[in-house]
Amino acid sequence: MIRPEVARMLTRWREALIGALAVATGSVLWFSSSGLIALFGAVAFAVGAVLLLSGVRHALFHSAITAPGVVEVDEGRITYMGPILGGMVALDDITEITFRRTAQGEAFWRLSHIAGRPMVIPEGAAGADLLLDALAPLPGLDTGAMVRAVRGQGPATITVWRRRPLRALT
Image (tube, rainbow, N blue to C red):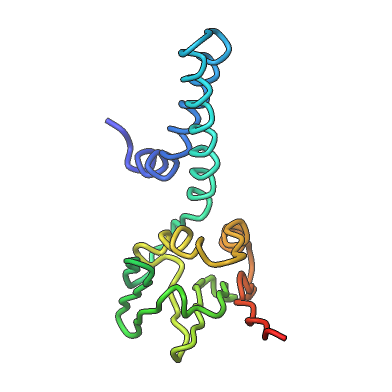
C-alpha cells in the first residue's frame, strides 16, 4: 500500500504529473511519427505543457497548514464560513487582495471589497486553494504573485492585486 504522506504528495502534484506524462507521450508521437499520429502527438504535447505549468502552480500554491473554516467558490462569489467570522464577496466587488504572514506563522488572505468590512480567509482553511483559480479572472491579476506570496518566508504583508480606478471620459 501507499504511505499516507506519499499519497498526499501524489494528490497535490497529480495535475503536473498528468501534464508531464502527456508531454512525454506527445513528444514521442510527434517526433517519431508522421501524418495524423504526429498531429495527435503535437496536440498532446501542447495540452500536456499547459497542464504541467498549471499543475506546478497549483501544487506550489497549496498549503500543508490546516486552519478552521471552509472556502467555497460558486458563480463568481467567494464564501468563507469560519468558526467566528465569515462572509461572502462577489468577484466584481473585490477592490484589493493582500496576503499577510505574521511573526507567529499565521497566514491569511484579505479580500477588500466595496460592500464593507474585508473578508479574511486563513491560508490553511479547507478549500483555500480554490482562490488561485477563483481570483484569476480579475483584470491584471498575476497568479504568480499569489504563489510567491504563499511561498514566502517570514512576516510580511503583500498586496497581490488592487483594482485600478476607472478613468473618466474627457
